[in-house]
Length: 69
Image 1 (cartoon, rainbow, N blue to C red):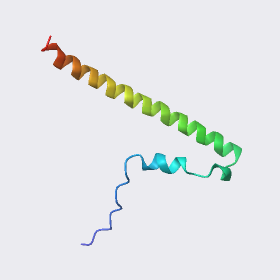
Image 2: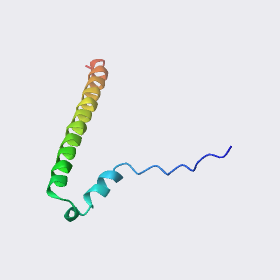
Image 3: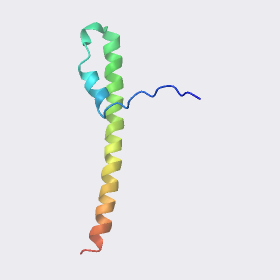
């Protein structure tokens, strides 16, 4: 059985890099406003993930620091 070829994995952050190089002159006003809404939602999502990671790090640090005090 032949399998379909698998596309190579994108490099982490490549989508953001591609996004920043996009020509915004091609967009209408309503498309730019929609783009801003999506980017702001992505910022909220990214900050939430950052907060979760920081909390996990702080919990791990507290656990390992507890035995060293």
